[in-house]
Image 1: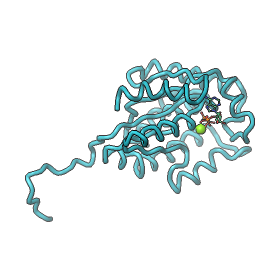
Image 2: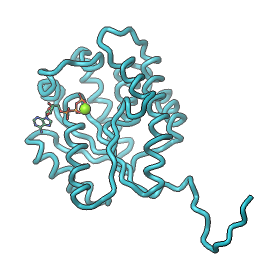
Image 3: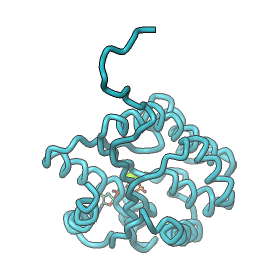
Image 4: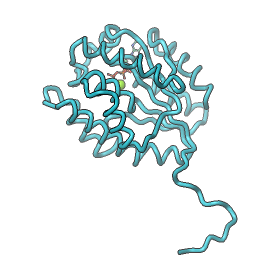
Length: 218
Ligand SMILES: Nc1ncnc2c1ncn2[C@@H]1O[C@H](COP(=O)(O)OP(=O)(O)OP(=O)(O)O)[C@@H](O)[C@H]1O
Ligand SMILES: [Mg+2]
């Protein structure tokens, strides 16, 4: 093994110097829109930020995404939870943790809380098993800040009504109401990292609300 000739301590690869920000909320609340607007704003301000989305931010993740979202596919709730966790495990290892180690700001369009809400509560898998599964998949990685975009299920679904809906978006109204209820619980459980933002109004208005909160931690 090569002898170190410097007095500098070796960089600890387990130290995550960056800031991890996640966007959560029901379908159509504006997560993808706001995550992209935040990324552009941070770029403008000269910050080193990356934007990731899930499922599907890695080559294997894109294949998992197809399996998960294909309309008409028969996917058991536990299979769904495992596939989301598998996608997340790959993305955390290949993309998110390496970026955080370099001190970057990582913005993720959905993360573990989506599984807690959709598979844990919406599908009835239970919060605890889904949390344990995801802790294993991500090595317990937790966001520094979670932006919860809150709006009624009805208004969110109206926003996406014009586009071709995926398998989960096509679920009945009650499913989406349960997901929204789950987010209200998560917001209380993880109050130390959650901020709830009113998702109504124009994209620019919502962005101003989001940026006001984000700028407090970066
Ligand atoms: N503030 C807003 N006002 C009106 N329309 C909006 C607003 N924000 C986003 N939209 C539009 O609503 C639709 C849904 O937005 P977006 O895709 O960002 O939501 P999402 O939360 O990412 O949805 P999903 O959960 O399906 O991924 C898009 O067509 C988008 O252009
Ligand atoms: Mg989206």
